Length: 189
Image (cartoon, rainbow, N blue to C red; front, side, top):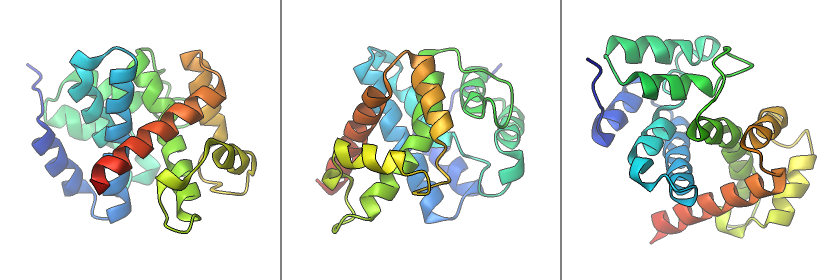
C-alpha cells in the first residue's frame, strides 16, 4: 500500500539528491507557487499535496539531468510513495522527457509554472535589489519576448501550459509573478 510523505520527509528526500542551493531554492519556490495556486483555484483542502508536488518536482534533476522525471519515478516507486504524487511530478516532463500528459489542473499548473519561475527569478536578478517584488508585469513580458534572455527557460512549455489551463499567457505570467512575490514577502517577514 502506497504511503503518504510529510513535508519534513520530502525536504530530507530532496536534500538527499540535491546539494546545490539553487536546486533546493527552486524546489521551495515551486512549492510556494503550487500552494498559492491551490488556494487561488479552490483546492485548499489539497494544498499540502500540491506543495509536496512542487517541492519534489525536480528531485532527480541535479544528479540525473538526462534521466529527469524517470529517475524520480524509480526513486519514489522504490519508497512506495503515493502514485498520484509520482504521476503529477512525472507529468511535468511531458513532451520533452516523457509522454505522461498533465491531466489534473494541479499537474497543468506545475507544467506551466516550473519554467516560468526560473524566468521570473532571472528577471529579478537583474534588478538592483535582486527581488521579485521589484519585477513588474511589464518588465516580465518584455524579458519573456527576449528569447536570448534566460534562454534555458522554455517559452514553448510555458505557452503550452497556459493553453492546457485555458488561460491567456498574460494571466499565467501575472498570477505566477504574484505567487512568487507573496512567497518572497513571507520569506522577508
